[in-house]
Amino acid sequence: MVQTSARLLALLSLLQVRREWTGQELADRLEVGPRTIRRDVDKLRSLGYPVEAAPGVAGGYRLGNSGELPPLLLDDAEAVAVAVGLRTAAAGGIAGIEETSVRALAKLEQVLPNRLRRRVSALSDATSTFGVEGPQIDADVLATLAGACRDRMRLRFAYIARDEKASQRHTEPHSVVYSGYRWYLVAFDVERDDWRTFRIDRIRGRLRPGDRCSRRTVPGGDPAAFVKERLRGIREGEPDAVRGRVRLGAPAARIRPRIPARYATVEPDGEDACVVTSRGAWTHGFLVWMATLDEPLVVLDPPELAEMARTVAGRLSAAA
Image 1 (tube, rainbow, N blue to C red):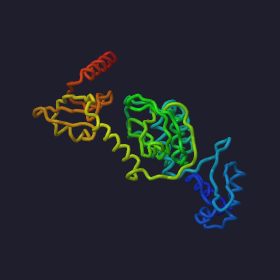
Image 2 (cartoon, rainbow, N blue to C red; image 1 turned 45 degrees about the vertical axis):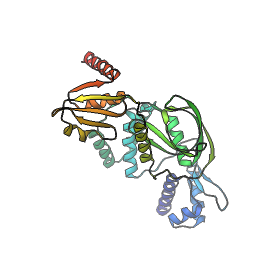
Image 3 (cartoon, rainbow, N blue to C red; image 1 turned 180 degrees about the vertical axis):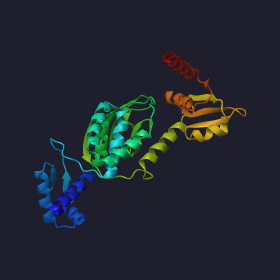
Image 4 (cartoon, rainbow, N blue to C red; image 1 turned 30 degrees about the vertical axis):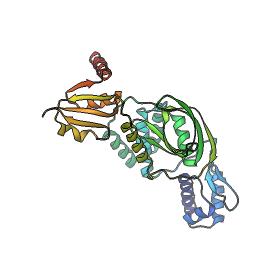
């Protein structure tokens, strides 16, 4: 009985890891015969797990949707990762998910073993975050995009480009990437026959799923690196962008290690000061970033950035 129960748990874990398995693949993994796999699948169904099966040589098994949520199996590392992720989500960033994350975290921590609860608490106590204004993403949109990436499902959607022009896109989603400030979809644009990155906060309207598609390999093999390279190309390709310039009361040698060269340049302005210039157009985030360096700060240009600095300073003074 113990051996059978352990095999059922192992089978359930495999079904949760990958979208679809053939019966022979599962049998090989668990070192049993296909007939045993069929019996174990029937037992999982009797316990409420919606295991779907497709007949034939190309058929297989997958964990389907259900009217109720059956228990999930998480190993130690996965449980810690989920708990830390829920704590981060509870702080905001994805619209409407904060309260839900708190409820889910409370349920998870209630059943965590003491050793894992201590690890989660240690990570939480030693980690601090601060908010920077950025576009919020609808949680349902994010989940739909991630599901399309996982299931290799084509998607059509309306998109607003950087020049505010609207267009209809027919894509093969590959990955969802978070830059620390914005969310991006990496996808192959079918009609343009090329890879594209889409800011998820610029996707509009209903996401319309299409047919299944073959798995493509993103250029370079790393979706995050692909997005980073595209963003760098955008910044360097904007000669007319209004860049932000600030003077910091600290030597350039002390500031350079704290500012990645891909985001801004640092030039000496005498021995005890330096000028920091944004690589691309200035943003509210650039101002906040410079302020968090905790050095004497003077905004040089543009005038709009200086005005924003005065506005923020006034709000902080009024709050003190």
